[in-house]
Length: 229
Image (cartoon, rainbow, N blue to C red):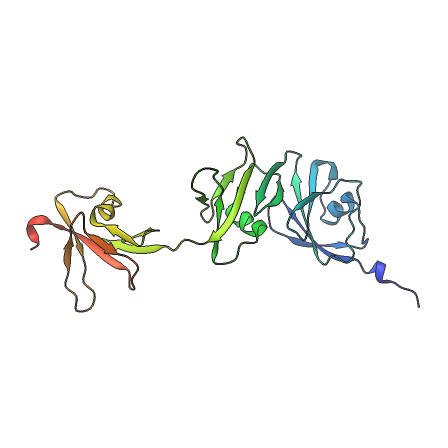
């Protein structure tokens, strides 16, 4: 019986200038780089840079007239960038090649393999690693190679002042710290913690410490000093 397995093609996905991957049809299990671009209807191929995302998460250059063996590797992912300016970075020690001047948090999560309960941090040598916020974009045009790592997502605590929601990564704040977060706080007012259930309302002194790791979230209001107590 004739073996037609080589004519069945191989599943693959291609993204262009980002991480929106779309399936492409590749009948040749060992296509050229230009064939991969052609399958994604990217023309002329000479204006694109093409990379394969390996099973390790590292990026590998795929030149136009270079073959890439798709056999026995499962679904392969490729990224094409318009132009040839490429930035090099690392995400959890995976070498990433990126063709845009910025990379967003979503792409860093994908390439670092971050889990749902992990956050991405910019590694700061000799300093404190910086949390990359959701929807934040990182400038890659600065000198040096950026390195990113993942770690458990910091817990966020919420509270309300005069109905306005605030958040912090600190489980406790003083009255002064809370007031400092409120734009235009009136120094002639006190900070009042609204009681929950049978608990009475009470004034929080500047050096008073409030535990924010509670449910429901703490609610505060500003009250004129002369009108309370």
